[in-house]
Image (cartoon, rainbow over all chains, first blue to last red):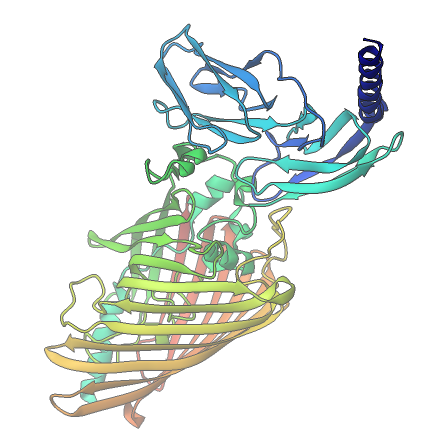
Length: 202
Length: 416
């Protein structure tokens, strides 16, 4: 019995230590900032910068992820969620909508449904899911599914700040619809803000 | 001799009343909310940026979307491309109708005609539709209504742009001005009178370069190193009978190849333009060398004519001066009667931008056939931009050695 308790404690300590060893840098609250330049489009609105993955780490799904349909528009146009997130697709419009995705990361078709109905999809793989409405050809949206919660939506000017990111070496990726995305490997140290700029082209 | 004079006079009459063609496109000024001078030295002459704009399928090089003030109406969200072939590839139409109108009026002074001074008010009313239809497709349609209520669909084509993702490969289908013409009347000529080399017909009803042709044209442009100069090419196959149905089975073929050293890139810069330049944009210190050839077969005046035109051209820009030269040789071979006629056409033109709104033009052009049938002409002209879209042009066609009717013309030209 004592052996089991000791083993359990040891495992707990090691586990905690391991966790502490990985999480401590995260608590350092490092910052990555920079500018995304978007060539060939009007501006950078709707671009996303995110940490693709942190080896050995997994994160809980994003809470309350909603992609609404209002005034013949998906709202928001770009939604960023962590892998495993259940995204709700309510129809708040006066007309019927159909939500489907042709993207390999998550192919689905929720069918056509009226106002007041909400359906959902669990996004269980990282990647970019394009959303379309089979009733309204002009409607589109994107769900950016990442392995980490470290993501930020970029505005028109292209500047971004990723706060409270862990220290270490990992890949930061910038994406925007219509443009080729870009990845950069960065090394982040505690107390030393990093500047990472991206240039996305068609 | 008398026969040639008759032919020349007839040709002159035809040309005097031939539709002149829309030559600048206010639809783009509306789309980008910019001035004509973004793309034109003065309408219709394109500056280097305008040439690159045209070579990009009527899009601003590197980043068209950034400059479009009225976004296109999307015919399906771009993400529908992912659904193809299970859905139609998305397209687009301009947010505002891509229509432009041109009206011009002429005062023609010709001492050898019954009415020595003629007011041709208006000479022509043109409706031009031009724009892009989503990625990789553009179009142009031009309807001309001329004095005498003649209506002519002058040009109408669809263009598949940037087939491989850059202006290096494009395909035009429709009726158009073949790119074998190095100095286009639509993009280059400032004067009401055309280049003699462009409008000259060696035989009655025969081929000339100004007639727009129906067919296919494959063309491309690639900017040279350091985003300067570059190469342009074109090859086409056309009916060779203008707006009419072909009168024989064989098709006409043509080519063009040119290389520009220095100056703005022929397909624009790979780097984004930060602003649309409005001043000194006629300056483009460069030299361009080109060669063109046109090989055709046609029934003219009931006789089968096998003909060709082959030549070269030089275009030099040095600060405010632009000097262009075009020389080509032509042969018409009537196999049935074993009649062969050769000629050489020469055009030299200098444009000098005295002020951004004032350009002086001096042209010498000639056609050398046999000694008695040569045509030689000098054309001094002045072009004044009263406004960016209103111009006043006066030219004086002086034929040397009585090779044609000397005449003067004053034109008021409005585009909106």
